[in-house]
Length: 289
Image (tube, rainbow, N blue to C red; front, side, top):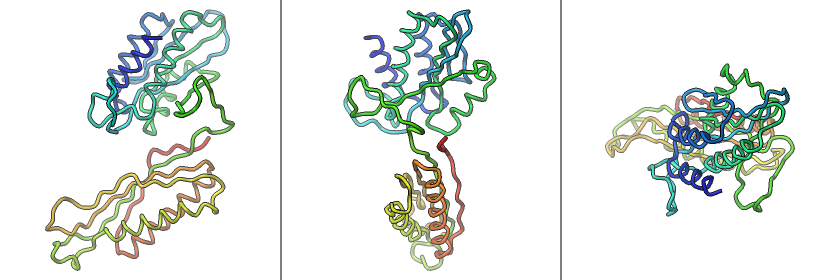
């Protein structure tokens, strides 16, 4: 148990961003050295899969954990708090890796009598292409798992308790980037330019109103403004450019369609009212299955 705790704390102290999990991958590989997997399969530059099997054929069961973490500054005084500025294990992936490393010890001591057990450590979970890249690698296709299991820490729940939910456990999610183009002018002559500031203000107000109209949606929806960029630090300039990034979430596909449509309509209408050119682009799209 102690070495599992030590592994988790070391991983927590040295988090790495998506597709840059080289040291994390190395720590996992070192931990598995004494567990004698029958096969080690690399997934791209950082992903790893450890295969435990017997010669007798049977089902292939895969357990998946994630290697990466988020660009967030950790604000606590733990002895094993992140040693890297602006990166932290704020989503629990260090815990997931530790749990499955502990499971690997059990499997190593009591290997399957039939079939295979695969422990997959996947890179880039926090961005949309991580899982897609893994399942399209030829080595993954040859494994052909019959079942894949993953988990997520749920803070506040009772210890030793497992929660199971029918259907999708997490919400669908997508990121929307809005770019607004007006006209730059001197700050002393703002009337000669088109500054997107008022449009940004109105977009924020209307999107807050949209997410509060709960009765038009079947289930919970969320609309979170996560980033705004407006101009530069130049007091002599009235900017002509802005960006706003928004995360949309829902537990129903119909709700996501409606939320996306109404969000787009509001932004387009406001941009036109303020004589702004605009582009809307989605990324990190995670639909309900």
